[in-house]
Length: 144
Image (cartoon, rainbow, N blue to C red; front, side, top):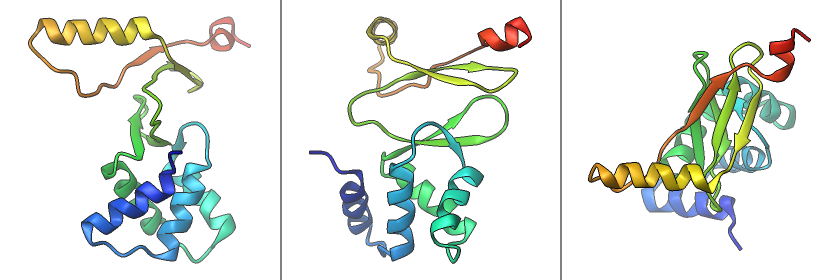
């Protein structure tokens, strides 16, 4: 069974980096979050558990998680980076409301197939992609 915390420990060891209790705590909390969170939101979760962990340590650990392929840094067009645990079971795309920021994850094999075909037609081997669709959610469109 896949364990993201173990994968993080292996990554740190392969780079010769210290595995501190703070980094382990940050990774554990992060991997248990669902959705897309800003640095500040993640920091607040960590601060509740251990106020001695600074925001810079959280940021640096998130960057390490991204380097390890265990987290994704997302940009939804509002100037704020958000993070989510990377999924070993597959990729997903996003629908993003430009008014309220609501974000919906999409998984559709047809989209994945078309993207792969388009890349291959151009002589590319697709290694990854970010697919964000922007619009207005039902509530914002109806003014609720």
